[in-house]
Length: 70
Image 1 (cartoon, rainbow, N blue to C red):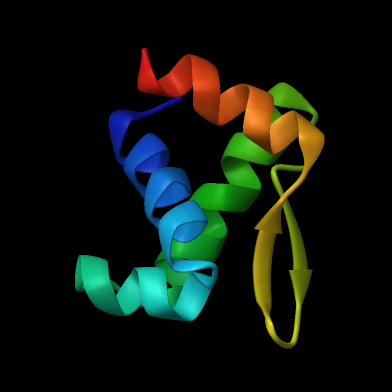
Image 2: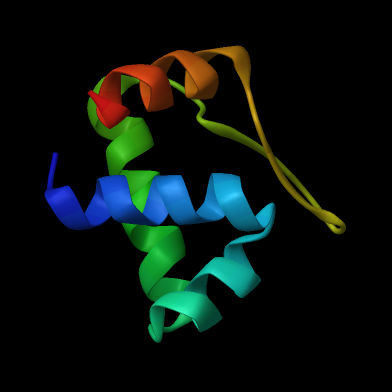
């Protein structure tokens, strides 16, 4: 796990969208997606429910974000 991945998760949760988070962080959407996929694979959890309208935290994602903020 890298600090950058935590920043991405936090920003996606705040924006409700991977694309908007990437724009706000001044990185490509693919970079954010790859970092998120790597993090989810590392912990074997799904952090966000992705759809055409955005991304919402799953229960595991809410739990993860709570610990990440500490």
